Length: 361
Image 1 (spheres, helix red, strand yellow):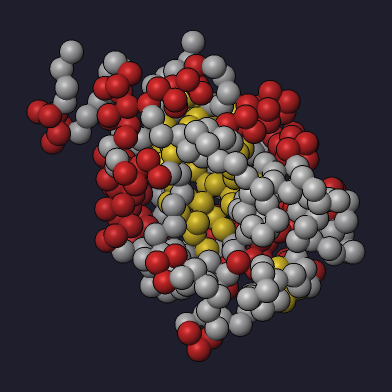
Image 2 (spheres, helix red, strand yellow):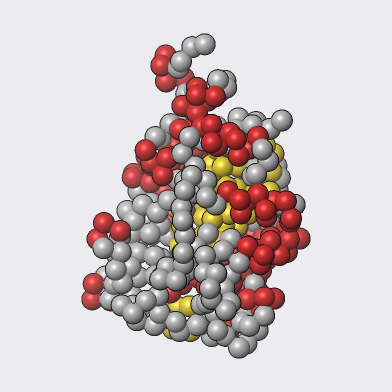
């Protein structure tokens, strides 16, 4: 029976356990450049025993950033420091990953500790905020510009070039961010996509942009390396005439599998916060990973209020998901992977510099 510390092989990579550091925005970059904060933040989680460490939502274009402090990978100059980070992660016997993202209509915002508010150009934001349709996030946010088909092609190309740079920077896993109300999710959901062209309307049309991004990324990404996609499995808007649902997520996962995606990272919500109705609790999103895994027969990652070693181990042992993707608990405990092994009585390798502190049986 698989458990939290069972290795898992995906494509050419063997992950030493099922623990993944979730992408977590740090809002601490300047002009997209990683710095010592990102090195320490990501590197310490690799030291802490995770098998896969995924860098935060990393923008494929300047206007695709959530905030001015987001990481970027839209120019070759970004590669050098990212390479320093991936080298360190691999030296800890962990796998470095990156989440490629475009914020869509949720771009040009201040950091959470500065209010998470829309920024005008005068405040350090930018005017070019794009989305599938000109629907504002809320009444306090100006409407985005609706992407033309020509502009959509440019964004797809941005993802392709970002994948090329990710490979050059030493990343071994790419995760495409198609969740939380950012650009790809905006195309998927009828709540934010009211287009009447080939990118809107039917399910087949609404998933077209994501499939084009997947195809573009695969032109640059090695066939031997894993490709993940994070989705919001539901918009949590049950009373809307149309929204993005678990049933659509299952169908999308089946299609993604046939298009060469290796794992679906199953999150939820974030697209229309004023309408969504969520009752969060421990592992509240895990059933989405379980259902998508069961029906589509694709590998899944469970994410969302997974906070203890026994909870994470239970998810793997019961076959609800293939990996656990942990965010806030890794902020509280950068060494969650090491402490989880102790709590579960599992043997795991510690950095030689820390060996003298390793609990002994």
